[in-house]
Image 1 (spheres, rainbow, N blue to C red):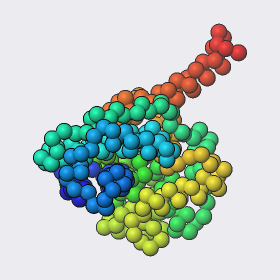
Image 2: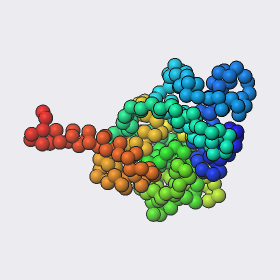
Image 3: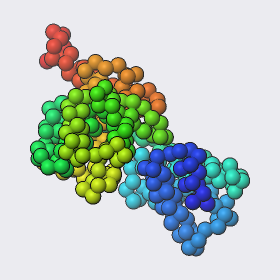
Image 4: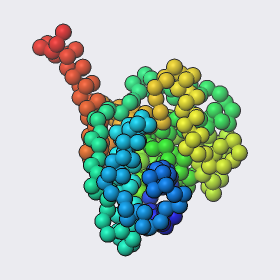
Length: 294
């Protein structure tokens, strides 16, 4: 049933490979927990029909005991609900027990981002002229210049580039395509990487040292390497995306345009960056206005 569900979200719902891995991981963890509850190694459809809100709440309590954050617990609840919805649709269950458990309220946290000076410092860290250093510089420049997700970076193919116009075709969440602008410095970095690597149009853009498409794990390692070299410890690949959005809004970009560039389905997702921009706005006001705070 789990295999059928994974096939469903992959083929019918067309979800990204990253999302599918999360679904599989969450449901595998839930399955392992249930084998302990029912004291058997293999679960049957009858066991799933015996799951109620008491079992689900005990599972959530178990997650909290392991130190998982509210956002992680909320994601697992959402996964379980989606799986049970599928089971009901297929006629294997009558009711969805996941609907009887409330989702924990997530705290409002502002995304971590770099200042403009910190972004310059990070992007200037790969100074080598070997192929991998040139590749790393192109990856970091593209991250910051286009505000891409890590999965979008690794999925870029050479045919997706329109460097003469400064544009890249990106496949986002739900495999939705969008066209994003990319800045001059990123274009130059990509051109240098292409010239050094002698790639053809049949290949992915960013390759590992073995000539295969680079993985998200490798990109994490690249960012970890250069953040340490530049003295910026508390950042992730996603921090560059947050920095992109924040610096655009602080520079006067309108929220709707930033939403389009980030590939957000809802404007409310983009609006969290306005909190950061308002902090900057108040700082400028306090310093510049004669009636501002001292």
